[in-house]
Image 1 (spheres, one colour):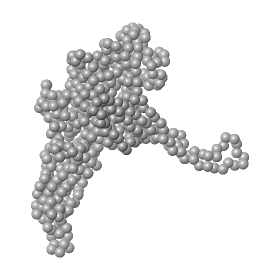
Image 2 (tube, one colour):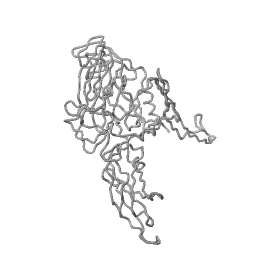
Image 3 (cartoon, one colour):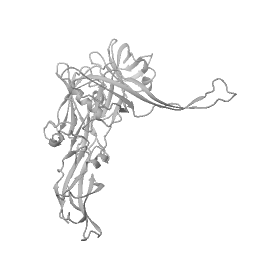
Image 4 (cartoon, helix red, strand yellow):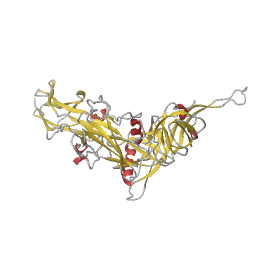
Length: 483
């Protein structure tokens, strides 16, 4: 009874879940009757699967591939509601989740008889593989032979380690956009030492301020984390509109200790909202939650299935009685959307077609507003969004809003006092008549699940100029209708 590991797991290495996770073993008993290798897969120290493998007929080796089993225990960590922390975990401790440890324990079974009619005896856990990690990701065919997780593993020494994303280094956002980056580490993140730095700059590139945010708690057993760094996320966590019209760009990086930057620095440019915007979230090839905006009008309709049966009318029917009666009415909303973007961004957005999970945001939108009246410590603003009147504003009348005037000096969070007239709102704060900008309800978003309907897409090929991306999708739920 002797099992030898020929090709072991790399200790503390992070294996992409969608790629092969291989172990090669050998035994000096492969010539025995009914011989098979027995391997037990342990995830986070708990056995989850046992498989038996016949030896290779030429070498006698056992070639063990556990990636397909691992994929059953990998699950995307979705943020279904707005976060209250910039830095937080991107997984749960219990599986299924998006990152965990893995170990394979190897044994064997065979029949000791000469004529192979004896009882098969099992010898379990004769040797163990190294302990490694699996994280949700998929590496392309051409990149897999040279792939290493080391450039993506965050440490505690000064470095420019990459986040888990194929997004461009510079992203353009507007003030109510969500955005996030995932990263992996074997270190325990605590409140004292780990920070996310946010540095804001004006139009001339001069620094305005630096803000630092710690993790929500000291984490145990977590290997994958997420930085929420969109303007919506940062302003909501800060409790103030620190990403406002005075800010033209801002940068985000991860820091350990007092001064040690341990990640790459990502840059965000700010722009005013467009007339038609649809914000989507999808799981990219790194298993991260990618957020993109499509700037063209969303075209919506319904796919309807009706069930009708025909009945005979009696002789004494009344006019208005039905002969054809509808008994089923199933409707699914279908939509189409498109946008223009740069080639680098288009290549990244194209991953939405490969994503198993896609959602569209229902979120508080930015509305143009102008101060039309002032009182002691109050300002009344006029806005153009009739569908908000007596609806969302009334629903959240006890909440807050953001206001950005032309100079940005009154950017902040203000309590709603009243809604005096249609399309008007009065807030507590000192303003001047003529102040203008955007207001936004301080409310959480909803993520509505969708399914992309396009089975073919074109990879952007233009070297310069804008690239157009469009797709069709349906809602991942039916419209509630009367039967």
